[in-house]
Length: 133
Image (cartoon, rainbow, N blue to C red; front, side, top):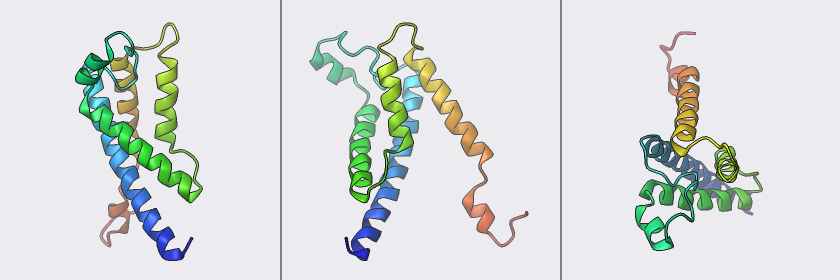
């Protein structure tokens, strides 16, 4: 691929990954607040038309962005995004007995994300001339 094309794809990948992360946090919050569907634990319990009707829009958006991120990462020769891999694994794990409920799984993952963000210094603060070291 040409350098310009690679740069454009790289910028698009970064933007999509940020959007995916934001959509993941939104879907996790909704799930933690009681909306099921993110981890597909109840899949098959309702007729398909009702599953579609009651499925949170955030989950649909997350899946659409996940497909776009996966496609662009594949085109660039990157491995899967760790958040996408984890979501797939958690969805498979819900089919096993004694799996945590969707709300609890969402809360745990959301807490991990928030703790990671709190412990990581912001990039802007490090680059700012008045930032303390």
